[in-house]
Length: 283
Figure (cartoon, rainbow, N blue to C red):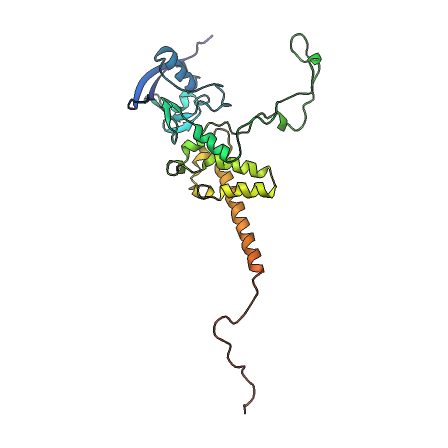
């Protein structure tokens, strides 16, 4: 049986404490060649420096809490293999997300993310508690189903959360976020799009499109598509922003067409028409 190859991964980690100047510290993490970046971070904390601060929870890209920048690019370290970001020589650089206040080391204050989601009317909530059509009697003593269970064709009620995992990567990658602190941002505008798709109520539609059409809405987007490129869940926030723009433009054309239809058609604007030309030799 062959043993797993171990790697010595050099890490250059951003460090910050309130009241102290930011700095970078160098560490070496010993991890298997199949390890992810989060494993290297855990190794640094466990064996090198217990003061190193970062967030993590699920380890499989469902919670979004560990998001940061790896070599300058927004990623989830829990699904990023060390061999994909380490060239074998230069240290792997770890930085906090951009466009958020740094709390400590790689931890940022993401309250602005949730404020934008709330402004869009999309507080992150569980859609429904998942359930299967079975009872305790269907389970054997081993916990294995004694009979097969037919799963409904529609699995929508088994999806506990929206596809967005609230990692805030899109807001860090967005160039506009750095220039307009009131910009609703990719996640907020994508939330408006999702809410718009769920309603045809005229007042709700007017409210949502009013948010999207505002000073800090879809028209502030520079169409860089960095948010879509960085999103680990393929939510495509840039595509949602473009869809909102299309709807807003379409509605303006319809309003313009209706306004033109009620304007009376007149002729001969300006100078009066001259005398009608008479045929023949005249008087």
